[in-house]
Image 1 (cartoon, rainbow, N blue to C red):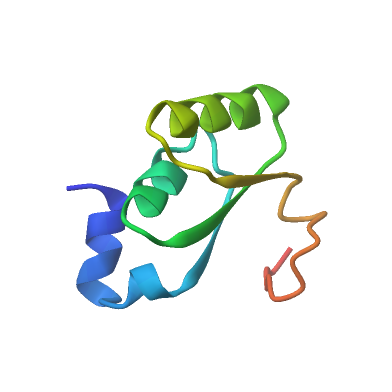
Image 2: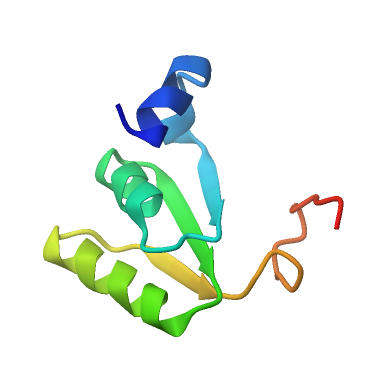
Length: 83
């Protein structure tokens, strides 16, 4: 069971929401969510990981949005963190 599957148990309409994956890493969640039809943005500071996500998504025929940055320095105004 993937992380996305676990979230679907609690949020059945997850694929209808806009999702932000903070610290997208190598993109497992971003790609899984996109493959299921969700609108998802990955926020990742490391260019190597951003490139890897884009390539892996492209290999699966998916287009994903990967943004350079971190939670502390984000353009996402709705992001609420206790930092």
